[in-house]
Image (tube, rainbow, N blue to C red; front, side):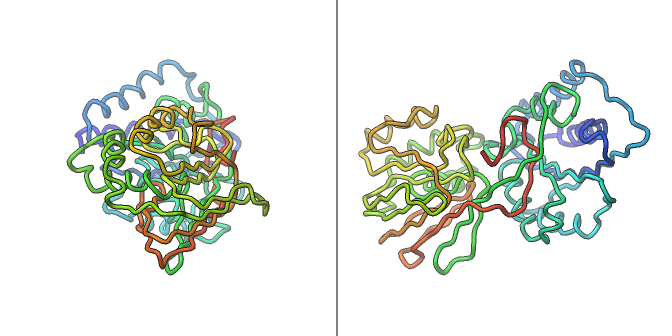
Length: 362
């Protein structure tokens, strides 16, 4: 952690205190900060983030005072892995909102912090969960789960008085059920195959390769994937509202299901570049794996041989061999006895403050 975190915290609290969001309501903001997030481990990135406060403050209109409205900001700093659960439980126990008030939870961390907070929110009663709005700031390494990967846009949106408008939206969830395993959830993309193996390598080697090492890990995984994973015929059935849209019974390189379309992973890699929320890449040789990197990174892989993009809300998958599964970067190795695996898009009552025109449930 750099010495910039205390300064950042004060600036963000002050920024939120001046917000014009929900001008007709009392607003209670709970700020969850992770001092170990990627931004705070790099002096230059932290300095750029802090400078954005001052630059944007000069460009947007000053806050419009409303004496009949209260804005209260409470801050919470995560101190250990999984601390988000205790924080969310405390928020439920100390709910200060009155009738008509709005409660906003701002998550200042990376994708791991956001995932921890949202999973913890799923433990709350539905009526409590539905009363919360979440906004995820891009302060990690990848930031694929944040409302925007642009820090200045995020600040503009939270000010409520700049160019970027926001709107409450439902946040769909991918529920993953594997035989003999607890239920898992993804709020961005759940996938099996090569990209899950990349996440596995990244999680184990990020201490040796700080920062965004995704591209490097893709190269390594492409070379060694078959040495760790036996590629065998995999049976998949994708359905949308009960109608079968895809059946597959051959080897796969990867199969990725997003909570919606227009989603990225690996720090902005456009695996789901449009309305379709499912991507399948069949088994391929090393040359093809390396050649397909750029199209997948830039979202131009539709129509490539062996690649299928589709839209569905339920996926059933069976494999005779072990496969890696990742859910927003969390990896689970599935053994043959863990199949079949199902992935289902569900509404769990979670809501986010999304950028206007970019619905989280699109």
